Image (cartoon, rainbow over all chains, first blue to last red; front, side, top):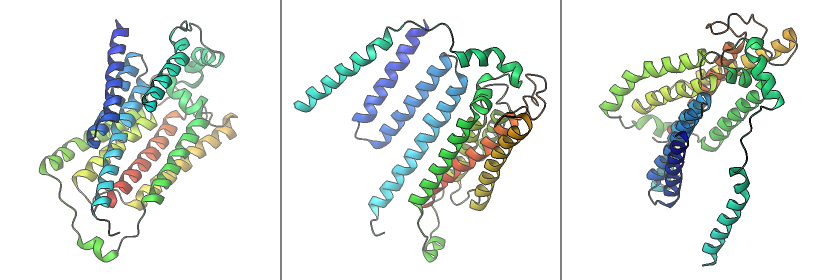
Length: 84
Length: 231
């Protein structure tokens, strides 16, 4: 039973990863990256590794996404005003 | 055309390499180190959560290295993103105000997130969690405040002082383990107490607190660097 859940979550991760590479919208790509981290943390919980799941949820889907979003905004600002 | 066929070839080769992993029989018995730790770890160090005792004590040197890598990453981000502010423009420009929803929500949620982070840090030796996870959660709480109230961040000097002091405390506990208990990062310098109670497991909670403060301060520093140049 658990194996089907794992396969389902893995398929979601694969679809999100391919979407993140293929899409033209950078924000959607960043959100898809966060979804991968979230699904990975669910898989870690199912596999009875709550410590790793916590780290993955905090770093993989929380902090990484925030850093990417802040960096994206910074890149746009630099592109908008190139007088610096 | 040639690009596409190369991609297909790469996929076939990858599948050929990874296929033996898929049909590998599951391994039932643990390795030597894992067997020894699972057999004696709880009575040895007095921490109910074996993962934390492995991370903090058994392979504590690796954790010290990880914290150092994080420190170097923070320094690198600061080095790349550092720009001397023109003092006349920085003060006159008022940062854009965040929406009222974000401000109210941030004020409402902030204490709960901080309490969750502190709980995870302090209970790292009993329940899942530990210094690293709790520190990141604390950093996220401060990020919320930074997003809701631009210009209000933890003072830079305070952050750097906390980071340096906690790093110093970590190394100090490690050396105390070497001096008193005989091993670098041996956490039995304090009595192990009763397994499962909050004050137990020797110096593991102290190391968790040090790691938590250090990681939290470093994460806030990275986020503040990324956020600062927007005005």
